[in-house]
Image (cartoon, rainbow, N blue to C red; front, side, top):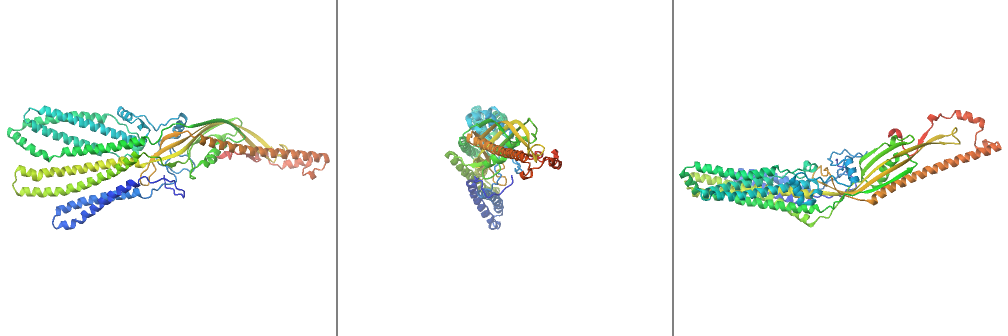
Length: 637
């Protein structure tokens, strides 16, 4: 869809201004911190070169990330260019003036016709699989939302289910481990080690599960409805049962292989090593962020479900016609005259089907039929949004950017603390310290630093996930348009009329056509939506039909205007026939008067003996001008 400038604007607002503003603020903060760190390199080179290199690494990352966020945010804030051909068509546009459209379409002309005829909407596809059905049972009206929202909802539901299964398995495994090791040799050590391993496994799994979210507005999510299977959930259940058992068995084997003195040393060392690991704090952070992300997503989805009242109705009209016109005029008049007057903002209509054989209907009692499916140019519609949707979307966007900023700052803090541990390690090598002092001076602080670095990665991942979910609900734009579909078939009649006193002295021939036809017309007022993106392809995305409402006034206006055009042209033909008939009668009266008086020249007529010579100069019948009124040039059809 190439950008086509026009003086008349389509009044499509930029939906990303608030999101872009918040994003650009985060980018500006990161950019400022990155520039500050880079300016600190020169003073540090003379006193602390390792820290200078760390500043170079972190400052470079902050500058690149800040510029990307600032540039992307400002791009979203700037003017939203929309061409005259926006939005994308529902199906392939076969109009003569159609541009070379390359955007994907979810429908074709046959599907659109069946939607109007059967009063159904194939956009709302039945979910496949028991898990998808369970999700749609919790949210009964989720099926009437666009596909990207359904994909996100099913994805989040699967993440929640897997998380609950993993947490439940962790709690059960912890209880089982405590019962198994109670009363055995090294019970405290075994319980502590197994608990730390299970916490770390659960932390890694939940972190990877929640921070991994594809782009909801990718082309695959827009054109394909995702299928959620139970395969992944089965693997989670198997892993939740197998991992604790294998871990416990592995620890028992390891404990049995240790010498008695090694067991005593390990038993005395475990209470000192346990504070090094911060898996409990990280696990709490992961669960809290996951619940907050899921809560915001659920509020957004539930609020969006009720925005569009779902209907699948259309208006119908059928009747019979009999007019003294060529049947080709049924579709040319409807397409190029009547429906052209219904255009919005002087934009061409979208023609999805224009098929008829009326151009070849030139013989007596020849049958014809044709179909025409047209969409009036869609106009943007600002639908009233629930307050819960507005607040959840804005707060989720701000929270996502705060999480991204906090994750970046924690990454800076953790990288700076790493250098402190490096210097502490050098001091430990220079002096002889016992295990307690080494743990307190190095390993416990190093564990806190590792926890900070992992927390930064978690916050960055959750911030990215939350921002993508909220971006989906900023991007949806609604449109309203009228769809008109008509099928007509009938029989054509042909008669030849001669101009002149009689057939032999005719100055011209005229082929007059008439048709006897039956039509069936359908029309609906459609509400559709698409998801905009920032960039050159801002509205080159598939459009989803959400609601089809009857529009009796529109269909009556179209058919009424078409019949008025037919009657006007029919009256013109009758007037010309009446004028020709009166001219012929006047000629006959003049000729009779001239014959009675014998003065042919005085009446402007020719004598009978001169008629033969004049008729010899008249062109032959096959070369006479043939005028087929209102059917156009049949050779071009």
